[in-house]
Figure 1 (cartoon, rainbow, N blue to C red):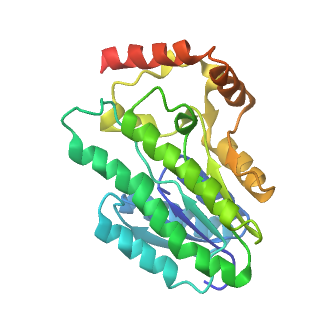
Figure 2 (figure 1 turned 90 degrees about the horizontal axis):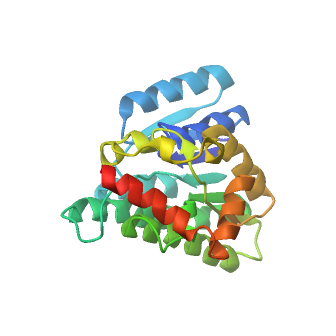
Length: 262
């Protein structure tokens, strides 16, 4: 893989899949990381045929540290890497003290530990060419940490601070770091067992975005040097209202309605 290379975690669906499709269209060779081998293979085969690029599949469950290390070593073995997208993640419907301690630690490993280790592996390689892009997929929840699942909002907030701090450290380079903070996005995120009680109808349709739109806007913003990026005018407006204390009760209402159904 001698040309442009992008590694994407959580690549089998949703935002990760959209990153893979759009970067393949731009001519990037891909390293696709996710748990579901069949979906990864199908995606890799399709993108290779459609865009005449190379796609490598790396099956890994990033909740397991030994598998995180496999991906880390794969990154370290590359002669160069142009784009790293730390997208893998999942949500939970539970309070901090509920009896799912191990699953909450899984979330810390996927969102925090894996992303941190992959950044540590990729940055030295990018410094050799003095260029590259790292996108850490966070969430609007990471900017609205007083409401929502404690572990989820905390780990997503970590990705924002990591991105800001890392970009500051790399300010004299051509390496660009972004914390992507999408709002409600149509994907398989809300179709998991953990979120099976979630009712999409509790969120106004105008607040939903498709994953391709999120990714297109993210890449454009990253290349312009936008470090913390919230795609969508209505999402940014919601954050403004939140900061003005006008939307906090609305956020609390959405969460309470869904918690009652859980």
